[in-house]
Structure formats: C-alpha cells, structure tokens
Amino acid sequence: MRLRNITGSREFIAENEFCIHNPEEMKGVWREEIFHNDHPLYLEIGMGKGEFLHTLATTNPEINYLGIEKYSSVLYRAIEKRQQTDIDNLFFLRFDATYLDTIFGPGEVDRIYLNFSDPWPKDRHAKRRLTSPQFLALYDQVLAKDGIIQFKTDNRDLFDYSVEVVEESERWKIEEITYDLHHSNQLEGNVMTEYERKFTEKGNPICRFVIRRGA
Ligand code: SAM
Image (tube, rainbow, N blue to C red; front, side, top):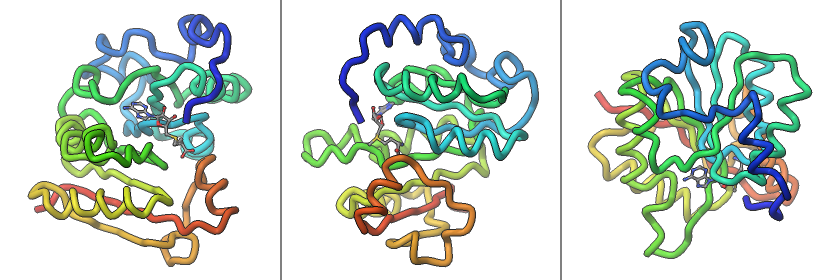
C-alpha cells in the first residue's frame, strides 16, 4: 500500500509521541521502556493504515502491540486514528522489517501478524515477500519459543508459495489453514483489516494460516 505522498508526513512522524524513533535502543527492553509492563508483545508487519491493530489494542488491553510500516504516508493515517483513542498499548515504527533482528532481542516477540503482504510476483523479488525463507529465518530469531505467526491474504499465488516455504522448512509447522476464511469454522475472533474488507466485499476468498515451530 503506497498512498500519494502526504506533504509533511515525515516531519509529523518524526515528532509523534506514538512512534518509536530509536527502535535499535529498545532491543531487549521494549516491555520495560515503552509499555512499562511485562505483557506479551505482538507485532503486525506491514500494517498499512493500522485498522487491524487498532481494533486488537482497544479490545485486548493486556497485550502490547507494535505496528511496523515502511512508508510514512501510510503510517500517517494510522497515527491520525491512534490519536483519537485513549489507550496505552499501541505504538508504531516507520521501519523496514528486513532489519527486524536489529531492534528485537532473541525471543522478545510473542506473535507476528502478516496481513495482505505485498505479493512481489516476480521471481527475482521473491526475497522481499514477508513469508520468504529469509524473513522466516528473521522471525525465528525474534519470536518466543511458543510464538506464532498468522498470515492472511487473498492472493492465492502468494499463499501457495508461502505454504510451500513452510512445508519445505524443517523449522515451522502449519497449525491452522483455510483457503476461505469467511466460510470456514476458523472465522470466530477474526479481526478484519482494510484490505480484507475490500477483497471480501469483492467476493475474493481469504486464505489464512497459523504456523509455529515444529517439535
Ligand atoms: N496490513 C494492511 C491490511 O491488511 O490492510 C496493509 C496491507 S498492504 C498491501 C502491505 C503493507 O506492507 C504496505 O503498507 C507496505 O508499505 C508494507 N510493507 C511491505 N514490506 C514491508 C517491510 N519490509 N517492512 C515494513 N512494511 C512493509
């Protein structure tokens, strides 16, 4: 998701109280320094305008949430919404997830959400897919032992690729999977994202898996 460039969005983010500006310094101490508690830490990578995390954070005050987004113009919209809500368990980072291991210590993250990640359809860009072996190796470094990764998309090619990556890895196992979430018995508790609403309204089936490390 790349919105039209919003004039001043970089400056706005640089001064915003809900954005973490020195994430490398928080490595290993996110709970103490940012959230001031010992609650679980959940991330969404590529959160777009942040509707999903916003809903989760308002309904689960006992969980700490961090949204990671690469582009200022998208993050700007998430912050606008965040500013209208009185919660203390949701912060954002303008950051490229390629460098995740520079900002989280081993096992520091309890859950990772990947929602409607960019598909990068060309083979030569496969490494940029957030479910590539390279990204799964990064998640392996920062995710707690029992941590999970949840992935949703309407892009069947990206989903099939991701399932293959997981099945070929010796590290991860699929715990839940559906190729049509909204007509499955896994829908309970589902929180919609902006993209999910848009694609569901068009009638696209939504694929979802949950993975964790194998025994
Ligand atoms: N998750 C939202 C949803 O479901 O509505 C937005 C989905 S949008 C298609 C994907 C988002 O991921 C874009 O906003 C993009 O900028 C962001 N993104 C892609 N690669 C990223 C990366 N390596 N690090 C951080 N954000 C990334």
